[in-house]
Length: 233
Length: 233
Image (cartoon, rainbow over all chains, first blue to last red; front, side, top):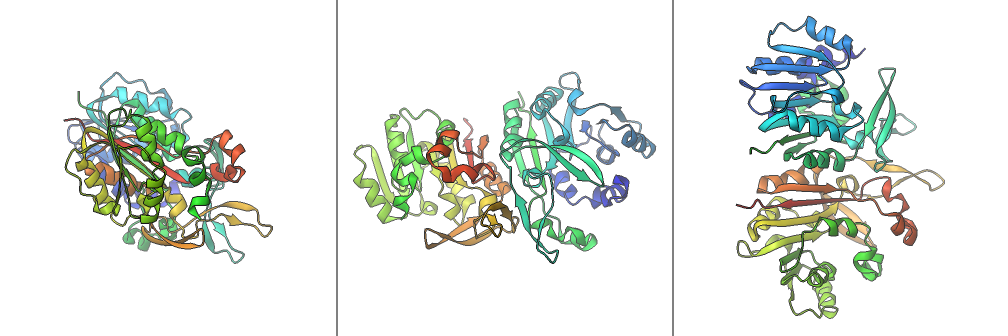
């Protein structure tokens, strides 16, 4: 089912926030890149196309990694089946770490921030996207409708109550962790990172034309994107 | 009417977010402090009580400043009637600039960020609170109620649509500017600041006991607090 979503068929170009995330990435030429929650490997292959020297994709799903390996020909991309929390790379292994829409599945985000910090070269970048706290606050993750089925507004509640949310996605129960904007940002700062940029992308007019279902995405933020750097010593 | 609100009668102790804002301020001893939108001068007098060497409070309201002057005895506090956008202090005048719940009334926030940056000493801090983007997105600034008058949730809409909101506050029409989290943070980064900390305070149990009307404040963020520093050269 996930493989039938626009972003799974059309790849990065069909993901409304990709243009913003891409713009937040540093130059990847000759970079050692780590992708946390790589899924089908779209971002890994993008990094390879930008002449990254080495790319490691980590994902917990054997099925997604099998598909990723099927559609990957670049010899310098390596996929590892691993929970994001369990990464254990030597210090200063990577120049760039990215993570697209994966960290809201992770129980201990602060620990991941510290591990990523250690795994980066000084001056290295961590660029991440997650579901926006406004989107994750209520487990229903849906609009509030009037009797005629019109979307009245996006309901927010339980915002300050961080923790597990049992949501449904494509008919499966999915466990996510709601965190406030405060936690998403401060955990990075506390790990030692310097914040470079925050984004809450809205779909472009082109994307809305191509995928009309996205027209309401400007009414509330759905993704939170953050880019940080490890200070150069 | 404003003067009848808990925070106007009880001062800073009755403002739920004060404990967090205070904790984000650097040591004020011997500091030259600027308060943007000082109102009745509570923060100015707090700064003086912390042995700031000099405190300047700026506000556009002659009436608020008259009251501030009435209740201020400290000789090193100076009040100036001025729009926040019109500040024009010499470079490096202040060690600390603070602004409590005022910048959402300002049309050109990015310019204020640049002016504050210039007015600070290297290593100086800017600590600010504003109404949270989730709170300002809809002009109604109210809960969504069921037929029985219960608060169902906080409605969010028009989030990505920055700009004017005509709201009502204590029976007066008030013009505010809605900005996204992205704009509140990135404008500071673009001015040259380093982000130190983000907070979205929820009222403490003590505050809720004292002011039961605040019990729903944990259901959605109402304030966004940011502290940044100007890099030491």
